[in-house]
Image 1 (cartoon, one colour):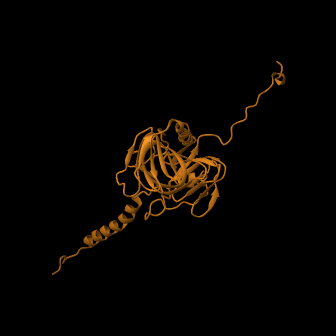
Image 2 (cartoon, one colour):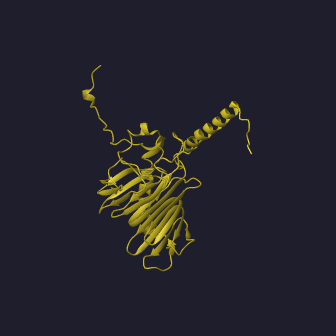
Image 3 (spheres, helix red, strand yellow):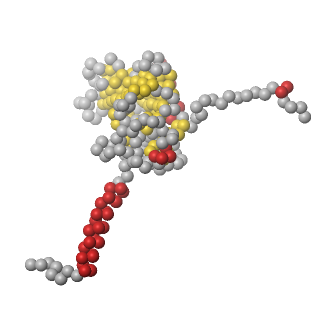
Length: 297
């Protein structure tokens, strides 16, 4: 039985047109899915020797350089400190002999020329591991859908925003909350964790045992505040914009980008997050002219 016994030339043209439309729609659908630009890390300040491992090279950290954030390992040596800013607006300071692994840092595209720099520009996900040392964090206001987690050998810290110091060593991990909201988990068995209030700190012993929560001792407040203040000041040295790759290639460093989302290929080839420093590289020299050298009138 023939379904279309009398196929006219017009019918054949309609069928061919529908087939062509379907073939054209497939690549258009792929193009419509906008990939996320590769997230960045801006080095705001460096004192002493610090190294960054990008997975391809190990470089000495220097001020005002930009790196792809995800997959990097930052390590400060003895008597060295530094401060950096992630492209979601989070500042981080690192004490001497600290090692941080940025295991995941991805960020959705955002609108260029933003007006509110106190709110992160788009949804982001952060997973970092502090294997040793101390970090101070100062975040912008995280938007709905964002997540931030810092782990240590014996604890996990989910950060909702604010100012927090995470220190880990042979004795265990101490999480001190200056401002904001964090949840601290003591190992994998502590599924829910403990919500920490500002002005309190949690200690998780390396040898095991229950989490200990107490007020931050007054004698520690000054030093802890200095660490988060350094991270907050770093945030003010830079802001981030979205730009076409052609425009941004002159401003970004020569570091190779890595895949932003596993299984989703490279970041958007037409858009890149660019760090724009807000302070001059050197303080301008002020010249004073003696009145005796002024021309007489």
